[in-house]
Image 1: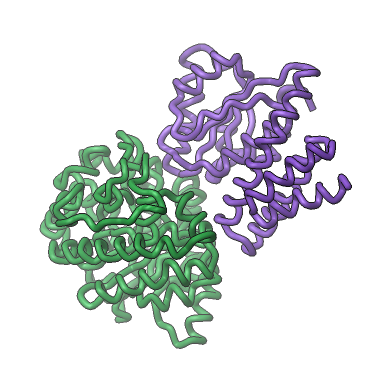
Image 2: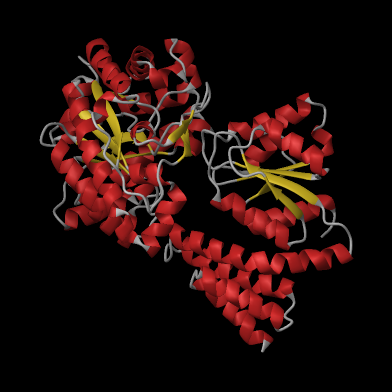
Length: 215
Length: 337
């Protein structure tokens, strides 16, 4: 039974079907499926679609709709996961956003979603986020991690601006700063003295855990 | 041959003394702003400043062509999309799309008298006078598919392209009509050629099927309108291999591609199909121009030429923090061959 539901969840992602994803998530909870496992099945679907995307067999619109389907299912599963997480230790707060001047959303959303499912308490500041706002929110939430995305060659320097801003405010060492996005490389992350570089959503979760020693 | 003669000959399939070198997309950098005394954001709004910065492409960089404007938001702004100013360091971007997919677009009256178009036209007239004797002056307009994306938002457009493509036609039709008006004004202001940037019509964004059905027909209609008078270079980002013949079928006088495209294979397909459209490209704007050495740039130029490009250009927009010595190295390498 559970196997069937997990398979169904994955299929809703491969079909990028928002409504079916929500139904399947509800069905999973009703049947007592572990919500973390349910999210895992959805993530399998996303990964499979991601591979097809790499091979140019599916394209961005399919990924975006699949991501919507994922979020829809997550809206049901996530509260359940949070409930269980709070029974254990407190989730680590993270602020995430796309840097100022850049309005790309899809990749950043994907990272936010994966961080959430990995048990982080994610606060998504959206797109076009000024360095001052990253700091303000991070302070307010007592965040350990600031994750900043840039998807354009013209906005990549803003990741450096963010780090310089934190330096100037004397709070650089209070936060782990992760950078990522299509135009970002490990080399660039090193150059601007970011703490970590996330090549994709999964890599970002791994580096976040590694830097916090919670792997 | 001067730069203008060279580029126009290449676009018309004629002989040239050497390969043309230009930047099909924007090439303004912070250093060029310093050298020309014309900076962003003023150069996005003021015709005189816009022309002064673009002229640096001829006087400082020695490209065969200059071009304006620097961003891709001019058309969408007139349709009512809210623009976010990029300040000194960035180009203007879309803050809030004007319409939703369910709205019906209305073509603004007197389109070419609105927004920043008068400044663009003023800049073209100035460039024509200041550097246009020797250098080709290009006006850049945004392709209908990409204008539609800027009017209703990229996400909304991409999702609709899959779920309800029929809702998008009115937006493409409106954007094509206003592009004709804009192009005509740009030609009347003296442009020698027009660049159509249809960056969203990329396979990074949509499927080959969507390109063929939703983007190419409007590109073709627009190009057949423009190239009765001046040649058209079409620029589409990303890995275009699967649709390269369709891009050629739009009738463009040249296709500007990124290094992600297999130029060698594209030229082979063209030959097989009796297509002679020149391909421009493909020096990587990040790994070569922004982060590379002059030697890396030279290698990029040589590789592009070996692959069979008909003119050398950066892949895509030059990042504004690119050192101009690297752009000059691109030009010098071509000149030295």
